[in-house]
Image (cartoon, rainbow over all chains, first blue to last red; front, side, top):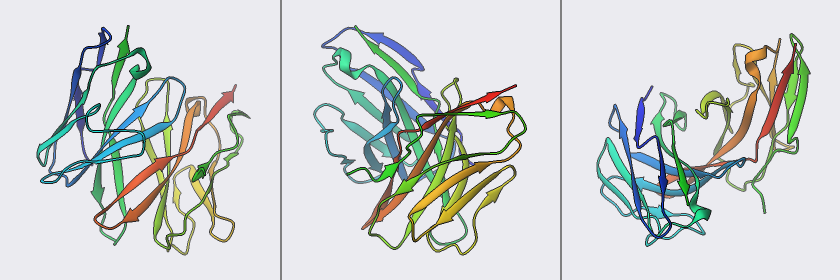
Length: 118
Length: 116
């Protein structure tokens, strides 16, 4: 299994400012993902962050708004830039650990960062 | 078009009874994985069960089983002997493989209420 920690666990920010969320994993993982969960909604994939390459963003998410760093196999950051109240969400870091059989494996999630933008 | 569809926003079940949460999916990829996660009010995402597209048998994990009907593209979660602690949000998810990696997308979720 993988133990994932995120910092901060929650924050209240003013519009126009930026917040960087940290994600630390207790084992080395190749693939790391960032999700957003708006209040009462499902999880939406923001981007995939593989170590040693540029993050791959999903439709509707851009690097200028959500820059991601992945300096090593256990750590990543997501920055929410120039925040507006619409960015108020829970941001979750996730990693995938491959299983023994081809194609198998489990995806683990961090506890999330609850962001409120005023 | 939605790739993962959960048509039940909310479900009620009596304690100790079984309940089925529906999930249908859409993909043209022959290789994919299907997952169910539980999210209690605390917000953590708890992995419940996994079914690979090539798996011949339905997955089971304790009280959880996945009713996988490939031709119908459905992957319903069956919870047997419901407990009060099963009250939570349940998400169906699908992992799609692409060149160089994969991504997991989630359905809208079903909120399950277990009644005493």
